[in-house]
Image (tube, rainbow, N blue to C red; front, side, top):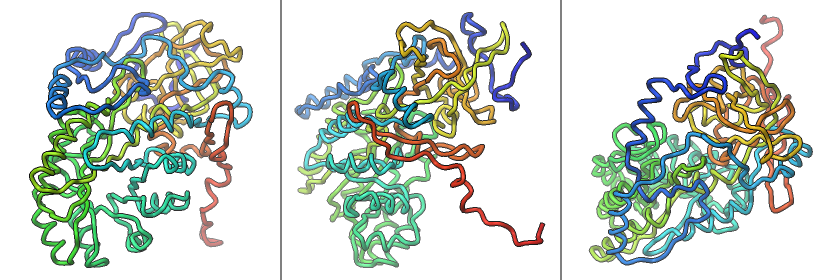
Length: 509
């Protein structure tokens, strides 16, 4: 059989892993990376299970909270999985997967209401000293049905654009429950504020614009505390390499602008990224409280979100108790020293959504590049639906569901899984943290027409896809509640892709 390029397009991805069914042969870069990871100490705040159902919160003294931080810094979590075993389905059954395929078609995002509610309850138990507001970071997955589920549980909304504010209000979310922190303060922000939306100004120019438009009013300010945390540079939103928020050394300028326009700064917001290191969190909370000391009218401190969630077996997940308990002590100490009891806000997105959704797709082709090459599964989805692997080299469990629906009895095989786009980077199974490196994954043997369920696709998948690339229509979305299936987004009609295009004047070409 002649050699094939990925999806018929020029292939730039490095083919470095597992020739045929033989042993793995990682690249030098990957080998060094894995050796480094193997020797690195991980914090105990990250529990080894990829399923976050077991997270629980209980009270503790200040002394025990400090002890937990020390213990967390010294203990070691299990090494993240590199997909050495065949993965299993999360909340879907084989029968439900085929029900989705038969009734709605593929690809299709499937959200699990039980998981959404359970994760919401967990965040609402986040340790706090004087009150808590949980704001769902709706950028992670903004479907109206999801917003409504969380709204019913008592969660508020963190919006990252003025258009997300409009979308949330259209879904029935009270404007007073929406907080806007945006890289781009929209021209229509005064209208949002008039409806009750709270705005956190994220730069000096934003604060100046806010003061000019709404002098004598209350406002929130987002600061960059000078420190960040994240799984990689793309998810770190604090420190000198981040443009998010007002640099902490510019605090006097914030005070001057506030005084100029008689603004009352009532909210301070910081966000360090998606690393969730408890020691970093405690330090940043202390730094953020120091900022609050400079604004006597502050009532609320928002410490953002970014709680890491394991999708693969053995990947760590954040223990909210270990993250939150030390912060309680910081708030209590602040209150003792200032007499001010601040309310805490957090902004989880991934923690709520990551394992609350699965993508059901169809194996639309199986190809091989020969005995010394690779076996490829071509899906009817790809970066148009799940971009994270192509962007970050992120790992998602991949479960073949044969037509027999006997997942456990399926013969094992190894495949490189690719998407349907004419793009060499459209990889569903890249090497861990190596988006340009092909990676053969063990899974059930697949045939054309079998289903594959891509797990862990609730956060930053539907909302962050390369929608309409190669003119593929936007996928459908459904909500599962027990045995019931509810369509929450129709599949896009192909004609809707170009419906806003306008013809050139007659005779111009």
